[in-house]
Length: 92
Image 1 (cartoon, rainbow, N blue to C red):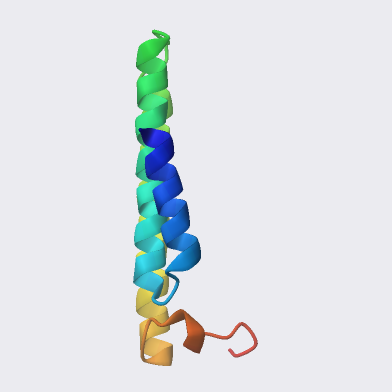
Image 2: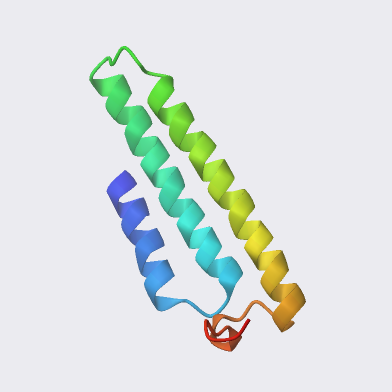
């Protein structure tokens, strides 16, 4: 189940890259599938650090989401839209 969620997010990221917001949502879906997989894995094997691994991954995904939203606001302010085709790495 989590592998199919991860693959769905990956295909959404590779094929539907028109807006930065849709790419960020696909990345967030991939992180949530990894969180679910890590939680189910630690439950299955009765790991002693049951809360440490999934909570660390959840903290990293929250940081990733905040950085992504900051980049979205910055690009929409400088370029006027969040379309990925209008962004160029050669421009400042």
